[in-house]
Amino acid sequence: MTGKERAGFRKLANTLTPIFQIGKENVTDTLIEAVDAALKKRELIKLSVLETSELSAKEAASELAEATGADVIQCIGRKLVLYRKKEEE
Image 1 (cartoon, one colour):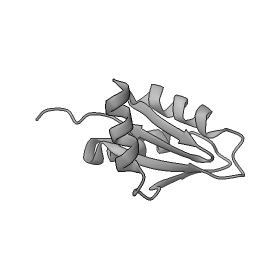
Image 2 (cartoon, rainbow, N blue to C red):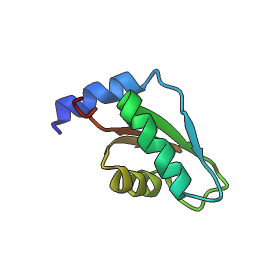
Image 3 (cartoon, rainbow, N blue to C red):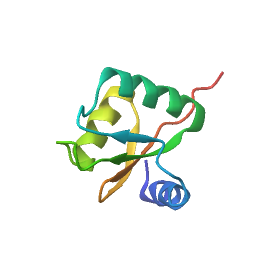
């Protein structure tokens, strides 16, 4: 992914609201499945990491990206944005 593409996705993600929260249970199989399903529908999603989590946003983003095959677009504070291109039907 080029820097220009990533910047475009960051711009789009600016208006998104987080659809998942990562809490004290951190990244679970259930969360991975839910994020995978959301990426299939939306391509671009935003998540937030609660203060009760032991993970930072960067750590959570890298775990989720690896598990779902997504790209990490950005991590700011306790928010993270993931992108995965939709599979052609």
